[in-house]
Structures are given as C-alpha cells and as structure tokens.
Length: 140
Length: 388
Image 1 (cartoon, rainbow over the protein chains, first blue to last red):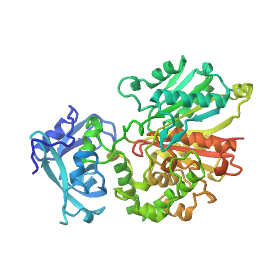
Image 2: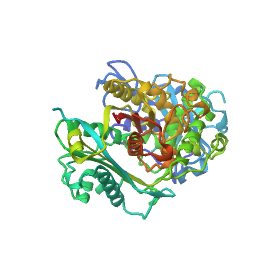
Image 3: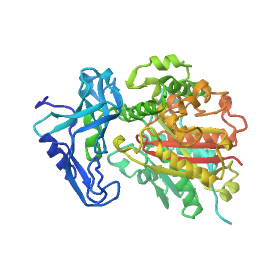
Image 4: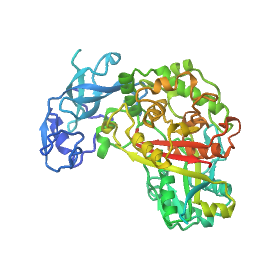
C-alpha cells in the first residue's frame, strides 16, 4: 500500500468507457471486457470488440495472472515525479486470458526481471479514488 | 494525356548546434523552408494551390488547424489541403496524397511543409502527456515517451531473435559516418561501437546513442505535374510507388512488438505499385528515431528476413562505402530530428537522385526508397522515387 494524499504522479482521467475498469481495481478486482460474440477478451476497454467488432460485450473478472511479454528498465524518469523511483520496471504483461497490459513490476531487484516470467496482479491504492493494477514476480 | 505528379523542389533551413540559425517562430522557419523549396523548383509561391502540413506546433490554437494557419501566413489560398498527421511518417503519406490530388486534377502545385523549434523553445520532455483516453493506460506507469515503447519492442526483438545491443550500435556508428560527410549535420564527430555501448542508459536496452537527436528544423517539398515541371524547366524526380498504414497508437496495442506490421503493409504496396524488386533500390532513407526503428524497418520492408536485421547491419554494411547506403544525410540519429523527421528523408532522397549530395553522394543513385515511421512504431509510409 502506498496510499498517499499527496500522490503527484499521473493518475488516469477516468471516462465513461473506462469507469468500470477503475471501479473494479478500487475493489481489488481486475475486470476487462469480453466479447459475447467471439468469446475473446480485450484490453484497454473499447465500445466495440477490436477482434470481431461486435458491440455485445460484458465486463468479466480475470485471474490477474500472466507472463511478461516484454519490459524495459527506466534509467531516466518519465518526468520529475518519477525521478525518485529510478530504476523502475515498465512491463507489458500477456494476461492468461489473452490481452496485453502495460504495468509496473513491483520488485526490489529490477535486474532480475525477464521476459517469460510469471506474474500476479498487485493492487496499489495510490489515492483514495485510484488503485493501479501493478504486478509482482511469482518467482520472488 | 494523363497527369503525372513529380517532385520538383526541396528546401530546408540551416542549423547550428541543432538550433535554427538566426532563430525564429515556428511559422517563420516554415516560411523560410517553403521559400527555399519554391526557389529550388523555380515556381512562384502564388502558384501553390495545394498545401500539406502536419505540425505539432502551436497547439492549442493556431496549431489545431495547421494548414489554415500556414496558408494564411504564406498568403496563399489552397484549393486542396491535407493535414494528415500519422506522426513522423506523415510527409511520405503527404507525397502520396499530393500525387493523387495532382493526378486527379484537385491541384497543380502542392507544397508540403514542416517546422519545429522544439530545441530552441525547450518544449520536448519525456513525460507530461495528459492521462486521458488511451493514455490513461500508458503514462500512469511512468513510461518515458516515446523511448519506452521502442525499448519494449527492442527487448522483445532481442528475446525472439537474439539481436544484440552491439548490432544496434552498428547502426548508430554507420549513421554518424554519413553525418561526418554532411556539413549540415548536427553531430559529426566519429563514434565507436564502444561509445554507443557506454553511453548513458535511458530505457533498457536503449542508450543515449541509440536515440535520435532533439533539434529544431524545417523542411519543404514541392510537387507538380510532369507537364508543368517541363514548362518551368524543373529537375523532376519521379514517384514510382507509395503505400501507407497504421496499426496502433498505444504501445500496448501494437500487434507484434518484434515486427513492424505498418511498414510491412506500406512497403508491399509501394513495391507493387513501382513494379520493381529490392535489388533495384540504390539508396534507402529510413526513419531512425532509434537504432531499433531501422532494424525493424529493414526487416519489414523485406531487405532481409524477419529477425535477421541484426546480422544484416553488422560490419558497417550501411556506412559510407558499405554495400547498403542508408540514411546518407546522417539521419535523425546524427543530422537532425525536429520532432517529426520524415520530411528530411524525402529531401535527402531527392538530393541523392539529383546527384547533389557532395561528399556523401551515392554514385549513380537512380532509385531511392524512403520510409517514414510515426508514433510509437505506429504508422508507416513508403515512397519509391527515381530520376529516370
């Protein structure tokens, strides 16, 4: 937990299309759209399924498990508000349900991160309104 | 007789230490580049009736309607406008769109212009994009923009194909050698593979010398009909083929991080239209926002097998005197990179095909391939040009 009233990093500007996602993370659930027509999940949430373009979508809680598809270690921060975190890991997770999701890997050893590592979601309540779905390494 | 579009003029503005000599506003420098290109063509500005602009400048306000603003500033009333902005590749798409407009009779003289004063105005940062719409799922993680997205793609390419940082460094070293032959280039001192490897880490595995420069710059290209070019006594460059595509904006939505799908699509279209094969290309000008951009592009355009880009660029193959002349002005890595670089790829290709590139001239260059990449490996547009 890093709940902090003075969180200065960027927070999502939530819109009607993304509110269910962020409402779920606040409740420590990872919920993403699934298409009733083709059966595939997608992320980030859209109005139409990006695979088959059906509008018949439903929000579904997913496992929060996946593997690292790619990652980078930021040696320079994305602006001054991230400076204290350097070096930090930005990873693209392939969720077990299919979609990819950009996130941070929470780890004390950034050098140990590898493509293919199994990961599990880790909810970080950065403000009373916003919870970011970060991930931790299963091997730790 | 069918109308055929040709390129008849190119122009840019001089830089010193990456800044426009004499300074100026973003409108002034575009006007200077436009005048240089019109003078190069030998056609008066009053004849311009097509204006193609892709500016990130001046937003909000004048920058939101860039062709309207620039048309007013130049004192012209275009009857064809195109503000297609697909990132740094926009200008290759503009050539295609202008060719279609000219050949369909929507305009007779098209002017493509770009300018940026980002270095002088210190307006470039790695962060600061608002977390709205698609970006709410990207920049909350502190991903340095845009280098972080390119770093993710590079890491995946290394994982799948065994590409090494040293292979990427070959591109930076070779490109610097070309820049050393270009008096207009910003960074001209030779560098070694070791220099690249030891340069400041930015976003693993990319280091400072894997990244393009941050400079000012302005450039322009003039197109008209072959018939009009003849009447004005212009030195025409022919447009043999073109194609464009885009696949994603968010790096999380890139279909395959180790594969540049947009360039595969645009390159295939351009080669098919030109009716030629790769061995007919004498010189390649390809967007080098990062060393990895070049590697992915060469694979996607089919100059080598997918995954073989690292081996392809080894042993300074793309350097002066090498068998694959690439980015002969010194590229975005060493010549200049004013935010959206694609117009300078076109300018250099035209100069090479006219045989006016001085020390860096590729002898006997007849056919050039120009490829722009925009966004975060988001868009691709390819143009094949020839002097015959």
